[in-house]
Image 1 (tube, rainbow, N blue to C red):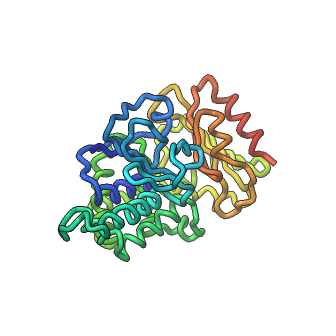
Image 2 (image 1 turned 45 degrees about the vertical axis):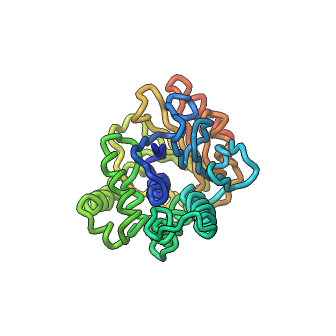
Image 3 (image 1 turned 135 degrees about the vertical axis):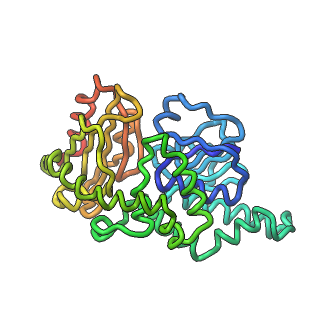
Length: 319
C-alpha cells in the first residue's frame, strides 16, 4: 500500500499510526491543493490521510470541514476509513483502528498474538501513544498557551521542525514517522537529526520575530502579514505572531508559494489567544480554491489574481 499524506505534524502522526496497522511500502507527501486540482495520481490501494477525499482511495481519514466529501453516513466505516470534525486527522485514524481492529480481534479473526494488528493495538493503547494523540490534538487545533509559543518544548517543538515545503526533507519526514511510532519522547529528542532541527528552530525564533514586526500591519481587528519577496522565511512557531499583536483576532498572511513560482500562498487564522472572530475561515477560503477548518485555512492563487483575492478576503474578515 502507498500512504498519501501531508508533511505537517498531524500528517506525520497519521503516518505513524497507519504504519502500525497497515503494510505501507511507499509514501507520497502532497498539499491539499494538489489533490483538489487533480494533479496527483491517486491509485487503487492508496491510503489518504489529512487530505481531501479521492474516489480511488482504499482508506481515507480526515477532519477538515471543507473536505467532508465522505460518501458514507457513519463517521467510521470498516474497510473505508473515517471522517469527523475532530481536533486532528490523527485522532480519526486512532479511533478507526481502535474500533475496527479491536472488533476484529475480539471476534477471534486474529489469533496470533504476534500479528501486526495485535501488536499495533497494544501500542495504540499505551500511555505514550495516548499522550502523543493529546499533543497532536492541541497542536493541530491551536489549543496552545503563550508559554508553548514563546518557550516551545516536547512535541510542540518537534512539530515546528515540519513545514512540508521542501521535498528534500522527505528522509526526515520518514524518519519522524518511525520515531513517533516506535520511540518515547525522550528518545526522539535525543535523535541527532531531530535535536539539530529543534535547535535551529529555537535559534530562528528571534529572526522570525524581527521579520514579523517589519512585515506586519494591524488593520483594525486584522493582523496583515505580507511576506512576499522574502526568499527564506525563518522557521519558528506559527503562533508567534499572536504574542506580538494580541489585540487582533484574526490574521491574513500572504507569501510567495515555494512550490509554484507563479502562485501566491494565502493563509487566514484566528488568534488562538483572542478567538472573538466569527468568520468561518474554511468556508471563506474554499471560495478561493482552498479550504481548512472554521478557525484556520489556506489557499493558493495565481499572482495575477492575488491582489483581488487578498482584498476580498480582507473585506470578509474585517469587523
